[in-house]
Image 1: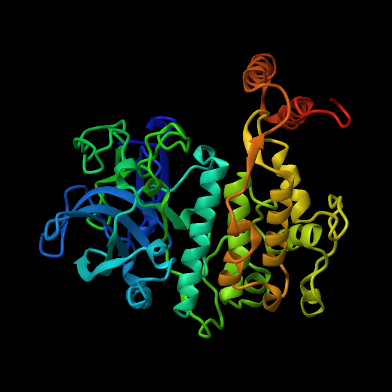
Image 2: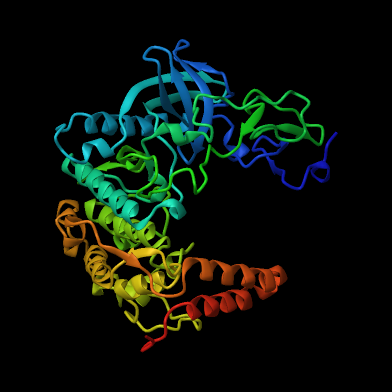
Length: 474
């Protein structure tokens, strides 16, 4: 009989809803969701829909279900299959309907190619109930901000807006725009060796340590694993290193390597049918009307797009991520000013830690602040282009939805009318800066601990800013 103390430090343990305890060795979806009405237990090599689809790897999981990479024997292709939770099968049927609608739009619309395609819809039965399955085109990985050059980030941002413009023209609001909802289209990057169809090795029944990203679900305290729970969990989906997809003139990558598509339509609604929006969402990307009035419309997507464009260009978000509504309101007021009169009832008392007056910051200021951390010598946007970007993002983050531009109008903004010019950031050479930073790490970061984190961060900030040329310096 095992106890939590017997588990390796990297393992996790949790109580299953039915009272059993399980111990797994990978970072996977919560086991508590494997219950009546919840996730369907899936194993590598499982076949679905009369043997047509064969599961070869996990792509992810979320509120609505789990997502898997599979082969389609009928058309000899890769597909991504979303297996929905049983208890929300009918709710996810709405998602399938809207995805089918998106396939009927005009082929000449530039944004249609930036929206994922639904290829098949079927149902399966299992120990946790009956599940809706949506087979969609397989896409490449999501992207790490670190490997996108400014040029590539601008191109990706433009494609994101085109995709959102398309779904709005089709009468649909996405409702959950964030970086994880856009994936590259090149599936050869799904695996480091370039073979996305190569499955990981399954663990044997008696394995204790994870094998190739798989970890057995093991009973502890004398409990037993039931058919409701998978025999093992698959770790996070394949990732790629920063060097795997680098945008440069001498790289072997083509323009198609930087094509992205919009996915994740679980929060999608027809425009005008959005009253009472109450699903889970990320505070950091949602517009004020969603958080304060539960109102979702195309303008809410525009606010989210502004946060997303800022994030992929500056490699940060324009304000601190918050877990409560009050904290989010404080962040908005500090950057965008006081809330409009109709939302004043939502304002809370200022916190003692609030240091900035309403509207003291703005999108142009945050863009300049974000640029402070660009390594000297790196190609970066000119001051004029950053001002143009600040103007665009300011228009997209107006409090009142009616004051924001449409997605089509965003595409017509000067920022997207020409590719921005890039120039090296002033300061020491890249070699000098990297050598100085390596010395800093050797001398100071080795002393880091949780109690000194703020001191170390302050020291690093001072060091970094010392690399920037002082005002009036030649």
